[in-house]
Length: 439
Image (cartoon, rainbow, N blue to C red):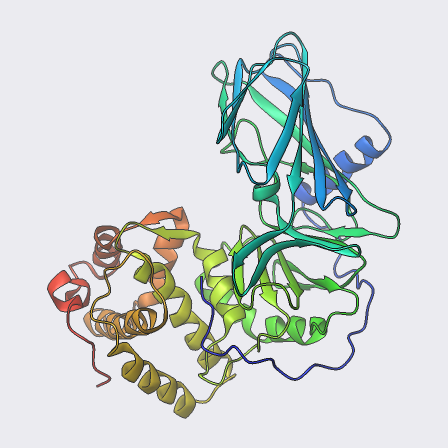
């Protein structure tokens, strides 16, 4: 993920308007189903499970005085998994209890449900430092900012084939608090989770609870929500306007972008950068929407959300390169920066890239990412030349984003060859060891 070049505090924005703007009404069946399920749960009504499904209900209670969230998972049905293993962080997931016997080691808790009902509970410590420069998870007396996939650890489920959970999640909030997630409209404390790829779902992505201000709107097919604690110098309306201006150009490349997007923001002592998650991202409130080097942390992280890629041991440059390439390219296409400033940005990257002796590193930052952007600029030029303008790097990016997951040089080469009809010289390993020019 990108931290950007600039660390100094930006001038505070005007005092944000607080409250919630509702945006467009729910229009698709999936959203209506979530709302209906939430209503049933609020009324204490549950739908009966079949022999191939069971009910799974999470409850998370915020306890600001202790700095923890108390989590409970209840499952019941005609058949239950025989074993559920939780891959825990021993510094954050503590005090496990269950109606059934638990096997607890330092990094894993094994839960063996028996009968038609079982329950496990634990405490999650919210505060977590990403580095000496700040926190990537924090709870105060007024708000809590964290990731759902840290709140509930990874689950490995052993069950008979075809057995799946019907999963709901409930937040129990202190008086005066509300919650913003990527699952439902702001203020929805109970919602369904349904990922067809998982037999037992868990919450994912960034979440913000507390005394918060929100701006929301429908941008193309995306319901966008910008949330930050009351009193923070977050630019909610500016961010929403920036998305309204630029997101449509990004959607032309990634038309399968999630239907919901949550951007959460807060100031110090949070980490001074941007971090993406499923359908969501964190952006420090002092980060500019467009940096002096003509890149955008916000757009960079949106590309991560769209592509859902992770690099193998030597290919993080591909992940970070695409994110940075489209952060600049999207601004050029939207008119956010002129052609002259776009070229200046590439020239600056060329100077910076000289500090990177190779692309093939475990982690791509700074000069390495700048070099990766130049490679992608050269690749776009070659694709357009070989296809007489019919194809571009957009087609390669779209192909990689379709499946997400781990990306390697070989996978990139294959995707490009399928777009062009033959291998791309720019992506040959020998060529990648050369610093691309700007001709």
